[in-house]
Image (tube, rainbow, N blue to C red; front, top):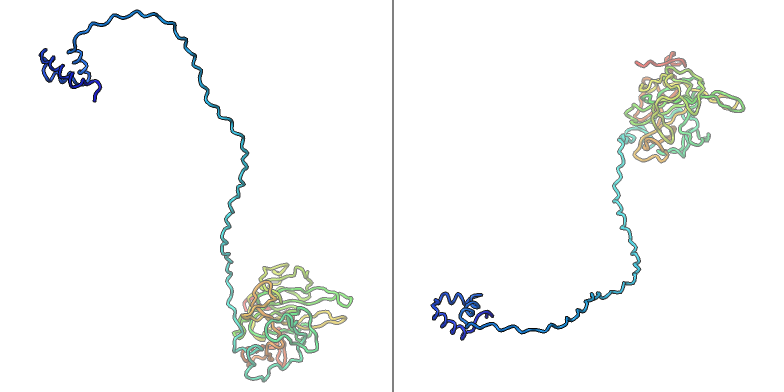
Length: 378
């Protein structure tokens, strides 16, 4: 209920007075709502005179009690807390996943084994042994068996001991300056001249050691390399004269070089250019490739030529530390079959020509002279 609203009895009395004074019902209702109700009561109520105000005796003022600000309760200070730092364990450094190593691929020439049709110690003998191996008495000192990695390890003269790392076998068929012949069709691929003065038996003497490196051009022996050494000179070295004395630590050399423990290619070293080597020149079986040299032998000299052969095989040669690991040294006297050369001789597959004049065959007279040289346009 509105507190300013008059009660029901008072409202009836007021309405009667309003009617008497000519107030309409609508006006009366307006007077009864809100502030109008108080006005209606005031208008309809009897007039009452206001009472006289009484004199009041002034009283002494009550002194005001000063208001002290009430201090806020003090919170005791917190005791300092010692905070031990928690050690931070560094996050483990992620280990990168190993990337697969990529080995550069070097193109490798396909390994050609010995053709099954080529007669040798690891295939089969020739169909007929007529005229084969007829000069075994001329075999010299064989190769060191410890570095032979394909075929029979022993060969050469049975009563002559070899020496460490000797790669080939000599033929005792030469005098100083005797012609040396090609055992099969082949191409000159490199040379090296380690001829020099050496001391033997207390005296200084010259030792001939021109080396020639050949690659086979014969279908019987694909991929085979032959080296001949202890030469006096060669018609394939058009600028060379015999009896050179060279620095063994830096000898004239050029092209492909083959040794018992490695093979590689050299740009010309020393005065190699002056040798006029016919690199790439092809010679056929039985043709002249050089002249036998001599080496000191105590108070005498020894004339011969040595040969070694590198034969390809799918197996690995453990001695090779540089170059083609599929090239193997063989024992020439027992690995190959040999036959005397003549222009009309029939050579079964794989049989090699003895590398010296024999059984009546001789080269043309001009090729038996040590000053003979080939020309590049042969």
